[in-house]
Image 1 (tube, helix red, strand yellow):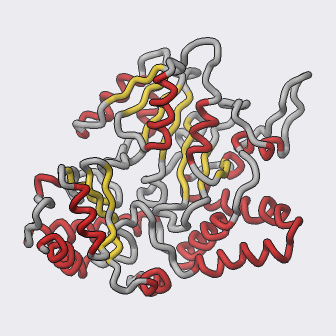
Image 2 (cartoon, one colour; image 1 turned 180 degrees about the vertical axis):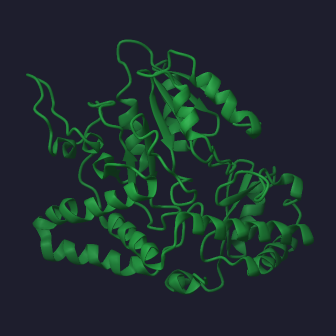
Image 3 (cartoon, one colour; image 1 turned 60 degrees about the vertical axis):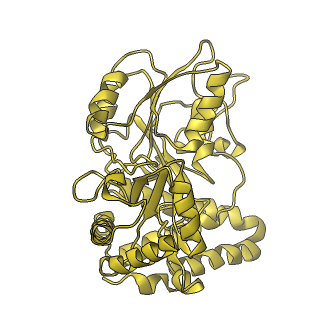
Length: 389
């Protein structure tokens, strides 16, 4: 199926742009335009009544879409926020306050978690153990061994590592390794949601799962969520007034909280991202396109891109610089080249209107439905030409 016509507004906005950063800012399909306008229209027509519509119609639809794609039994466990950092703060606020909390994580977590925990660590407010992500072929066994050790208050790990694309396949085994009744278990699914088929049904009672619409859900910013397992961390200290919606009566002098995912809500937000998210999910359902279908498409494009690079070597993008290879390794929707020249290569490509990104020594190329395996050689030709100047 040719998906490019469904992204005509995005592609025609800059016809000369070669966008190879779908893992960062994913292009929006055309259906999001009307959805975005609908949010504006509702804002001016409903005015003060807008929030009745948002929480009565838009949010429940959003929750149902998330629950369907993650195979959750109850959509009400899904909380919403403008960004996942809001959830990170609230989860950290659930840790014990009568001793120094202990956190188990990896050395490959995204900045929204890594920066905040590093800062708290500076002041001795938490203790953090970071398991190296590499070598990837032993990561899951090493992390499970560490997670099985009692005494952690939080276990936080990404489903797909942002700085390599490595995919953790056995989420169930990882969660099972954590002793019952102990740590909060948190899975950062941002690079997994809508990129890799994900079934949380076996672990929904124990693990938090956070992600959002900015990347593979193709909905832009402002549409993040967290699945909140019932009964775990019922009263985050970092709380917004929306968390009082449907709150159970607390004891004397105690703040009440909603019993479902609403306990992790914040305060007033821009709901337009939720409109866009719902439009994308309805569009995909109408096309009968599954996450597995999209993953297969992107894996095919990435394989063709790697093959084309091997046929036409490009300085800085040698095969041995590729951290993970599609068809051989478990990989998300982007290719990561490890090179000390990541920054300069990024800058030269951007000057040629080829959009990529980098993190330290990791140069990343992200692919989407609006890319074609048959055009991979053309993509590589443009990259090679830009870097040969």
